[in-house]
Amino acid sequence: MDYARLLFSFRGRINRARYLVVQIALLAVWFLVWVKSPFPQWENLGLAAAIPMIWINLATTAKRLHDHNRSGWWAVAVFVVNRLSYLYYGLFVGQNFGVDVPGVQILLPVMGAVALSLLQTWIVIELFFVIGTDGPNRFGPDPTRAAPTSAVGPRIESLGVPDFLLHRTGPHPT
Image (cartoon, rainbow, N blue to C red; front, side, top):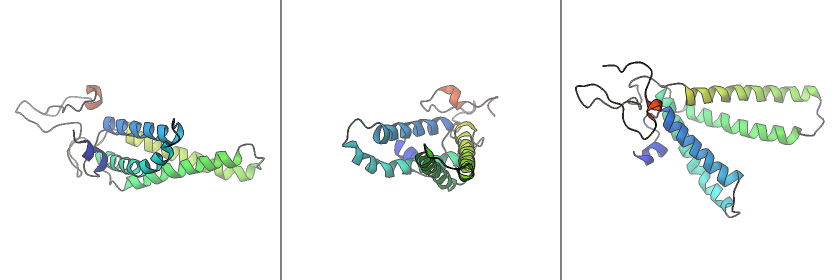
């Protein structure tokens, strides 16, 4: 497996399993560096790691969107929604916790929080749970299937992930 192409290229497609593994790894790095840093000197490491982590997130999200036959430019919109919600919830919790705010002033931020939550929920369902386009599309071959190597029929490529994550329901097309 070519990890450099998987992590840094915007071309091609990836399946749900690979996308999930990369996103969990990014989340673990983010948690270690920014949230639960055991070493104070890692603070500078966090700033140096931010650019590659953003690039990897955008590249893998674009390839996951390609698997749904969508333009990779939608990855920018996903990134913006994630950052806006992070900023929004931080400001919302920071400004309104323990402060007496009239109900009318808090109604608009609550509606914004609900809208952002619904949008993020749709993004998570689309990227992590919905199966991509069956067969090849304009962005490349199906990442869950290899090209046929014999007259027997197509075979599932060994990707280092459990077989149940690779197989689609139903019989293989012949």
